[in-house]
Image (tube, rainbow, N blue to C red; front, side, top):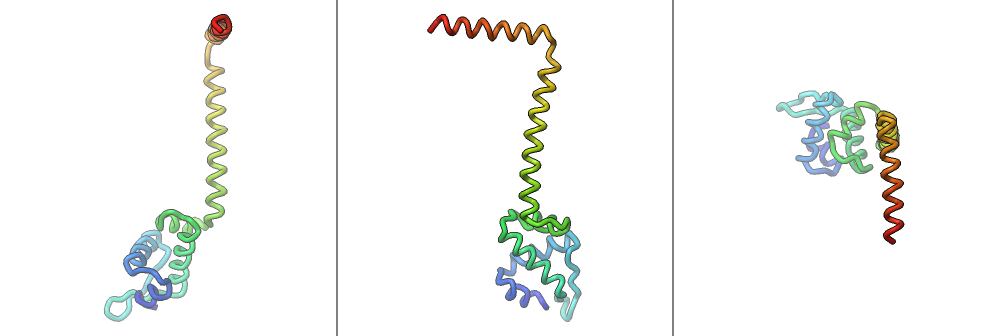
Length: 129
C-alpha cells in the first residue's frame, strides 16, 4: 500500500500522516520498503501501526509521540491512566512520609517551644474574644 492509499484508508490529512510516519520510524515501529519512484510501500503490519496510533489518539492520548511510546512499551491508554493514578497516590504517600520525617528531625526542645507558643496563642485568642 502506498502513501496516498494509506491516507485514504485512515481518512486523515497527508501532513498528519507524514508526521505519524516520521514518529513511527523514529521509534522503529514501521519499516516501509522503497517502491517505484522512491515511494514508500507499507506492509500490513505498518498499516496496523498507523491504525493503532489513530485509535490511541481517539482514546485520549495527547500526542503522537506519547502514543508511539505506549505502543513501543505495549501499554494501552487504560493501563496508562491506571498507572497515572497509582503514581499520584504514591507521590502523595511520599509527601506524607517526607512531612513525618521532617517532624521527627525537629529537636525535642523545638517541639516543646512550639507547643507552648501554640498553647499561649490559643489562650490569648480566647481571651480577646
